[in-house]
Image (cartoon, rainbow over the protein chains, first blue to last red):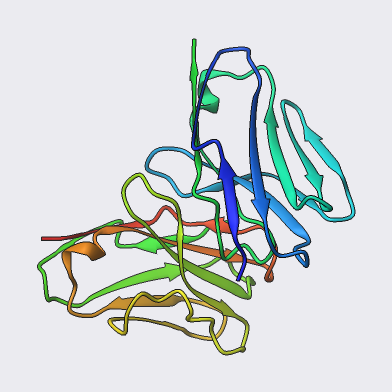
Length: 108
Length: 113
């Protein structure tokens, strides 16, 4: 089955700094790479995704980069704000297996 | 449009009782997923329904857990003879197909006393 590793498990940054979270997967057949954000007491919500025919995708302060050869993809958040504080999950491929999550804390 | 809904939002039960958790997916979504999330932990896959195919039950932790789905609509997750370790938030998600964006419900928080 798919092995998914997500790093780091926790990340603390100052407001305005950048944050990067990396997800490594094992199934080379994976072709869908989403990132979800989960705020306290809520279900996860998709914030950005990428498919295997694209290397990078940006949406305002958020970007995802994909390296299919190395089998990893990363979430980049620039100019972080306190409302970015949440838990972030990757879920590559069929998305049955989620990464263990990264708790991002942005302090003002 | 309406998102994924789950009921009840909270359920407190006594050890040994059976519980049923309900999920109403987004209309037209053929794929439906159930996950378990223990406090401070990640999402643990339980079961996956895709259209009329046989469900993928590979994540169910024991035979006390079962789930059904009526066509491409509502799904029910049943836990029999609940144990304290079953206490968690149970999340349901649906998507238009497999390997696509999952839309999550708010979850059902289950507490087994």
